[in-house]
Length: 253
Ligand SMILES: [Fe+2]
Image (cartoon, rainbow, N blue to C red; front, side, top):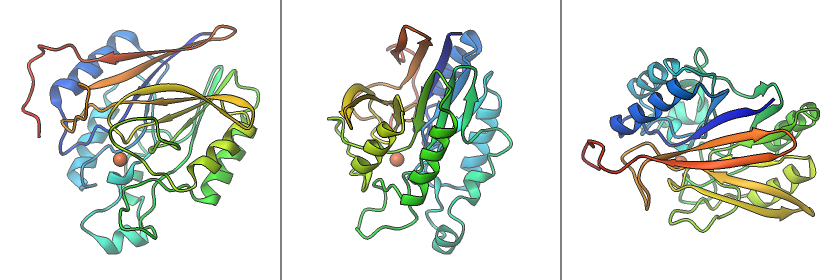
């Protein structure tokens, strides 16, 4: 059975682009994809009102939704909460989103790449913890019968020649382990520009797919998302969808 997945990222409620969000929601309503996968940064500063707006918007989409949180989704102003309960606000979305997602013919496994703090000045960069990687590897193993196995994380595990970088600590090691475990694809966000490349890890090809942003925080490209079509026996086709120019826009930040 063929599958259609919409891969979207970095919605940044608090700095959202309503025109882009409406454009995307309309595409979901028309296409009815098997799932929408969001690779993080739902909010700008993890404010309660930003999560509430994200939950309302995600809950109204006409498809199952999976969200892997990004570095912007941990408390920013409340450091005590950031260290003691970094995912509490993200978990308020539980009602409307999935963590891992099992579809007929595909499995999407979450791999966290965020940390409340790191041994470097820039805590927004990626970090793969050993326990999180082990959990994702177990998920891949449990989904061994799926036609295609995708991993969803916020930060690209390795750089993909984009203007912004992820500098993910442990990313290369994680990519090798995921390839060994049979992952076919790694989906990510964070850099706000799309990419699609195949690299070899552990002697196996693994596809790295990045989604752009639907927020006002643009880098080099207009708002966009990825449409993924998987046909068993034929493979995965990735079609980047860029918002047409000339749509009435709200002012950029
Ligand atoms: Fe990010």
